[in-house]
Length: 205
Figure 1 (cartoon, helix red, strand yellow):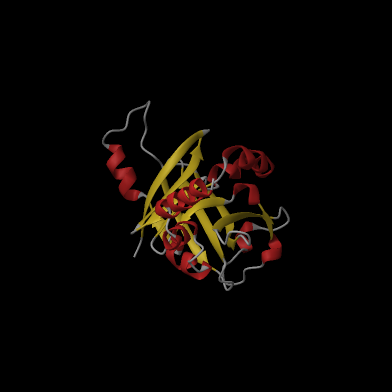
Figure 2: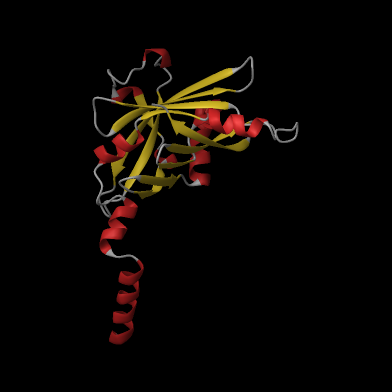
């Protein structure tokens, strides 16, 4: 039994060395570093242009989307502003607060989205005057996964998030279900007309 236990320990260590595991779940990364990696304005114009040449009525080009991630005066918080040009006549916007949170028991990181309280006008919200009390947690939609110094790959759990999202109406379509951040790219999964929409955006200078 002792030999078997030792072998299992060796397999675990070989599969995920301590430093590598810390890198993957964010245990060795500061929340400030994650905020700095995400901050910026992202635009999927290149994705739209590439798809337009191949677009059909059954498979249209993706809409133009911008995602602005604005740091606040609190290092663990940022505002995410999502703008979508659905068509030539329709543009939609949503704003979220994202809290970079570290779990106590395993030190892993997660991005926890917050939605505005119904009594707060979205037009009055600013990163410079961020007020945590204006927001309601959507912890069931937390994005968990790999958080590294130069790359993030995280997603939410579908069913718990779907249940939590019922209370926010149509805004649910603009709540990121998954994100990938690496290089100058931010890939975000949203929803368009009930169908998952994968946005491939690039960071603007």
